Length: 175
Ligand code: Y12
Ligand code: CO
Image (tube, rainbow, N blue to C red):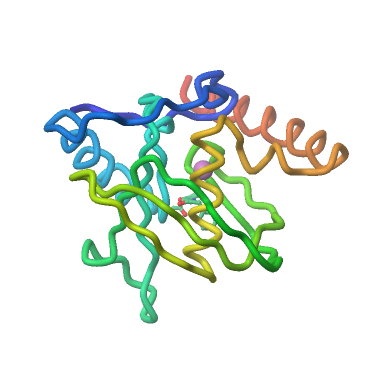
């Protein structure tokens, strides 16, 4: 399966992803193809909509204490639902669909997530720290929300200007 990262301002990123009902080979092929894309792009989280598949599936791979990512720490979440959320935290987020832009975003500190694994088994976990932030970021993707949608009006305006400039420079360097 050949996948590419969809980048802002592509309208597909606004789509609401559909619930997954079949835990079959087609789903496994999608998840298997998303993993190398995320790793090659230095990502720690990826939603299926970011590779043009509007399905409620996300991957998470948080680096360990040595800042290394390992497939042993890969978490695949199908149809995730954030059931409980408490506390507040701020983290400088980035997104593979919004390259070269990072901004402080407010999130819940601790969340409880209900999801299914690739075989349709129900899982419930309570998490905090970077994994909690990453899950909230990726679940937003499933609802067509990007972290830049959470910026203040003035910060968003500044972002749009900087991003447009970056896209223009990218285009002219390819000529
Ligand atoms: C905390 C905050 C955000 C998330 C969501 C997942 N985000 C990512 O995985 C972002 C990855 C990313 C990687 C980039 O590439 C490199 O650093 C080489 C990057 O840089 C460029 O686009 C130039 C931007 C974002 C989880 C937890
Ligand atoms: Co993202």
